[in-house]
Image (cartoon, rainbow, N blue to C red):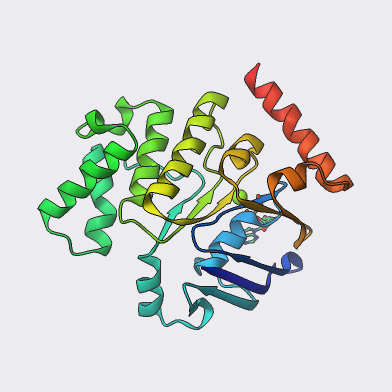
Length: 249
Ligand SMILES: Nc1ncnc2c1ncn2[C@@H]1O[C@H](COP(=O)(O)OP(=O)(O)O)[C@@H](O)[C@H]1O
Ligand SMILES: [Mg+2]
């Protein structure tokens, strides 16, 4: 579904991605780990050309992303859902309007079809009763669920998540991770998830990579990465542990 080859991206002298290659299979849940500032968000943006890489190749759904025209790119993006860091709901719109927004903007559904999709997706995230509420009436966890619903409402083939559980308490974070995996399965999507959250990764990941210094430093199942005899990985996962212990106190 996704093929990344020798991707490079620098900002001036700062080399952020220095030869990154990986493949993600259809229906696979692929996690990208790495410390803050290692280029995880840059990587996601390069995949869909919200940012242009300097070099390399990105193939999504058999399309060579870096060579697409703008209209071809827009067509491809219709099949890709994003849940980016800090993605917020529109405060002045109801839940229904928030969910309809991507449908109106990118597709030509009739009002009846939109209504059906909104109700279906709300059912999937167990928030049917929130349909006419304003975001300010929802808890943080509920907002996240609606945000998730909004990014999958058009049933994309590929979902990109950037730190989907950041800023959530451990219980909500687990709920969101479980919801992500449920949606993945029921909608048969492929996903790439950037996360710091080991618990989230354990729930979601079929396979993961660890980015360090612009390169892939480790690749495997979460089990393989967390037990690898490798100082960088050991340090990263030990810090994770301390982080999540502190959070739950
Ligand atoms: N538009 C930009 N211009 C200049 N530098 C950037 C830009 N976007 C990201 N960077 C730099 O690239 C590095 C990687 O950023 P990012 O991908 O956001 O890291 P993270 O792994 O935390 O998501 C950081 O040093 C950041 O400052
Ligand atoms: Mg980031």
